[in-house]
Structures are given as C-alpha cells and as structure tokens.
Amino acid sequence: MPGLRRLTGRRIWVCGHRGMVGSVIVRRLEEAGAQVLVTPRDAVDLRRQEAVERFVHDHRPEEIVLAAATVGGIAANLARPVEFLQDNLLIAANVMAAAHRHDVERLLYVASSAVYPRDAPQPSGEDALLTGPLEPTHEGYAIAKIAGIKLAQSYHRQYGRAYFSVLPTNLYGRGDNFDPQTSHVIPALIRKAHTAKREGNDHITIWGSGQARREFLHADDCAGACIHLLRSNVDAPMFNLGSGEELTILELTQLVCRVVGFTGEIRTDPSKPSGPDRKLLDCSRLRATGWAPQVSLADGLASTYASFLERSAGNS
Image (cartoon, rainbow, N blue to C red; front, side, top):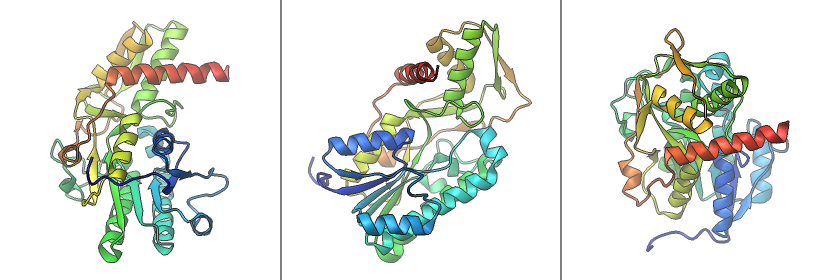
C-alpha cells in the first residue's frame, strides 16, 4: 500500500516482550524483517531510570513499542493500588524520557480503555478522555495510563516526537495470565469452568449480576493493529482498539463453559463488584486507516483454552 513505512532492518525495542501482546508483536516484527531488541525483566527493570537509560544508550533503538505494564483484574487492582499506579507511572516516564534523550524517532505506547470515565458515552470515542470520574475498581491503573498517554502527547507537542498511544479494550489470548488472584475475566472464567468440570462440581459463581456488557479483543488482533500503526504515517495522538462486538458477562460465561465443556449451573453474586454496566469503544479512527480484527471470540476462546491446557500439562 502506498505511504506505508518499511520496518525491515529497523531496530525496534519491544518492552514487555514476554507478555501476551508483546510476544506476538515480537513475532510479527521479526516476520517483517525488523531487528527486534528485547531484554528480560531481571536485566532491565523498567521502574529504574538508570537501567532504562543504560539500555537505550547502549543499544540505540530507532523505535520502541512500550507494551510492558503491571496488570490484573478487579481483585488485584483493589488489593494492590500502589503497585498498579506507581509501577505504571514509572515505566512510562522512564522509557519515554530515555527515548527522547537518545533521539528515538518513534514510540508506540500500549495504554488501556480503562482510562475512560465510568459514565463515558457508549461507545466511547477518544474525546471522552478526562471528561468524568474514573471507575473506582481500577482507578490507580487508569490514572497511570492516562499519565502515559498525556506524556506521549506532550513529547509530540513540545519536541515533535512521533510518540502515540493505542487504547485496547479487554484483551485475552494464548499465554494469558490464569492466576486466580490476578487474572482478567476471560482467563479467570476459563480456569473456574475447567476446575469445576475436573472436580465434578454442579455450578460455578461469577462476580456481579452477570449483566455488565463488555467487548473483548484477541491479543493477535491487538498486535496486528500495533504493527499496522507502526507501518502507517499516523497523525493522531491516540487510537481506540476494540472488536466492535459486545456481550454480557453471563453470555461470555456461557460461551466459555461451552468451550471448556462444563455443563453445570452458572450462578451470580451481586454482592461482588463487576465494574461499569457497559464498556464499548468507538474505533472509527483506527478503522479509517484500514485495520479490522481477524479473530472471532469463539475461535479466540478455543485457542486460549488450548494454551491453558498446554500450560497445565507442562506444570503437572
């Protein structure tokens, strides 16, 4: 396509390369012929400014994909607000500062749709940012991500840097985090349904009424959108990234149970928090650049469950 940037031979540092999205971005960049730079967390702690500065000085990336973050579901956000706020603030500030000081030409920051106000119009466009109070269950994480988005915009406005952000909806996929204490809704439901099936339980219980509506995007589609934007000459500071399809948490649970093969009852617990009633993104800005998701929810859930079984077998 005319006007697309070539990634062949470009030195691109992927922060968070072992993550669910980062690992796919690495693979896609390598397929595109890029020279991908990665570093394990124990070698470069992105929360430590000196370590980040040293890495960027020594390896001189031309572009950076900042996909590293401290993440988790509602329970984890409520239990550890300091880490979710502080870690993500430090990661964004340290990486962007080092990028600017060492003349990194381009930076893509992977933020989150959690930044939008709890009562934002649905579907939410990019102009909904900072128009109202945040969802309390993930406020710390959202504040940190908003700061990262605004920092990228500020580097562009003050110094002309091509630093911009993507705001994905709820992500899932192969390599997801299935820890019951820190996982997001899809891996948590997969583990819950699988355990109930294995142990012969007659029901599972989900948080909230089950009527909250959400949209989900496979990690492969998120990575594909990131590569698409890295190839493009984008002129916007931020892009929503979602599938455009929504369903209730109860409907999601029913679909997960079919994939897993659990046939018991699904019970709800309205005493538990479930977040905002509806959360859907307006992705017309990104769709206008020619991108569209490729992975259906049914296929994505099947492959995610397969990866859970593979991991479980490897740990047995």
